[in-house]
Image (cartoon, rainbow, N blue to C red; front, top):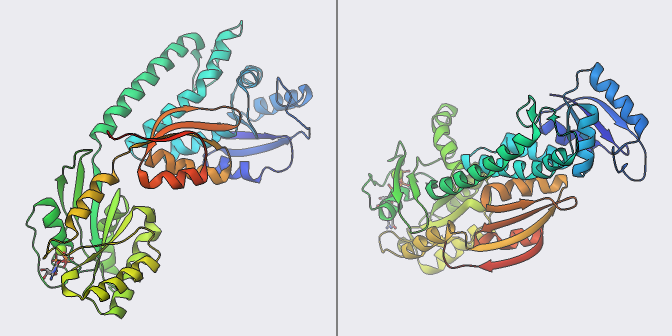
Length: 407
Ligand SMILES: Nc1nc2c(ncn2[C@@H]2O[C@H](COP(=O)(O)OP(=O)(O)OP(=O)(O)O)[C@@H](O)[C@H]2O)c(=O)[nH]1
Ligand SMILES: [Mg+2]
């Protein structure tokens, strides 16, 4: 879509970058140096006339304002320019819309977008000439008052559907790691299965998936093909789909064999980090030391230390499938992983650095409601215990956290 950018100073690098991510093609930039935006049109009247002429001449579809438009400004500008007007937050929401991948993320972003549009629609309705609004949402023109009711209904539908998707969505856990690390053995005890276990590399040559049923949500556990160092490229290609599946998991149990010699152990941890971390959020990788029964306790400890010093961030756990040690602990980590017991209301200011954090918030927490008070995004949400500190560090907490025991 062809777009103009309108700013009140020359510092528009960030807005340009945001627009590019949002898929908007920048045709021209209008700068009007002034202390504060005009209360009605953001820019002065003269500049508005220039804008109008360019919009018509160049068949511009969207005009982006570098800043925040109040609902009345938004309304006046769209009425005057007869094309959709975006402000900074609207551009950010557009980026989320394009990036959201899962059904759940798409619904959350759709809801956020509807909530953003509501006050603007109200302006249109309150204005005497409640009539047509240019290209709202999907393009085309709608009678605004009728559309307002439609939007309300749509919001309810999206909320209901979100609730259903959340209840039904299966969470994916992959058991990954170097060849012969004990992946299939652990998979078998966790899933009550009997896939083939042997003391050689590549016993497993395709993935197997089974349903686990901890009380909170449906969890799918997948046994995967092990990775190895220095394999020829065609082999790597063959494993690509396995790796893609691992990257897309909600949680990866990364198994490392505690019975390996120290040097070998270090090399495998490094290889695992190089393989996994570029493809996914490191916070979703839980390092698991396996076969601890084969190794004296002091050796187990030094290997745990290696894992702690590695680029993996989560606290490793140690298991022995043979002795059934650490299995109960792993079960309870799996259960706790997907419960969202903490409720928060937070405020995030709309900066480019926060866009990544917002993206993370939309994919990792349940958003209960969204509002947009003065240049910020206010979210009420539920999250995991382990995400509390990350959220507190990145956002202003309005209320909470409060912890509920039911999931
Ligand atoms: N002593 C001991 N041996 C284990 C343990 N877990 C797995 N093993 C052995 O380690 C070997 C490899 O186990 P698998 O479960 O097949 O390993 P894998 O990671 O699935 O191997 P690939 O599919 O070949 O990558 C087998 O001989 C297992 O019996 C354990 O906790 N203790
Ligand atoms: Mg296996």
